[in-house]
Length: 122
Image (tube, rainbow, N blue to C red; front, side, top):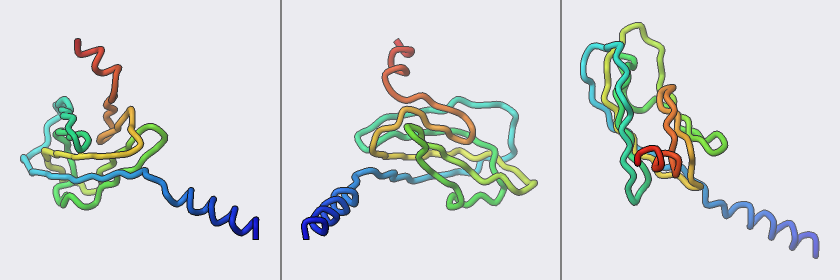
C-alpha cells in the first residue's frame, strides 16, 4: 500500500508539467523570391514574442504545414521546402512558451533572446 501511494504521488507530480508552446502564424504572399536576406523583427509582449520575417517558401504554402519544436533552451521553427516553384512570403509568428527559451531558429536563421540582446542594443 505504501508503494502504491508513492507511485501515485510520483505520477501525479510528473503529469502536472506546466511547459507549453503556443503559436499562431499569419502569412501573406508577396510575389517572386529575391536573394536578399531581410532582418527578422521581434516584438516582445505580455503573451510572448512576435516575429516578422520574409522567407522564400513553396508557392503553395498554406500556413499549416510547418513545425515548432523545443530542443533544450531553443525553439526550432521549420517550414517545408519541397516544390520547385517558390514565392516570397511575409510571415508573422506569435510564440508563447514556458519554460523560457534563449534561442529561436526561424527558417534556418538564429535569433538570440534575452539579456545578451538587450546589452547589444544599448
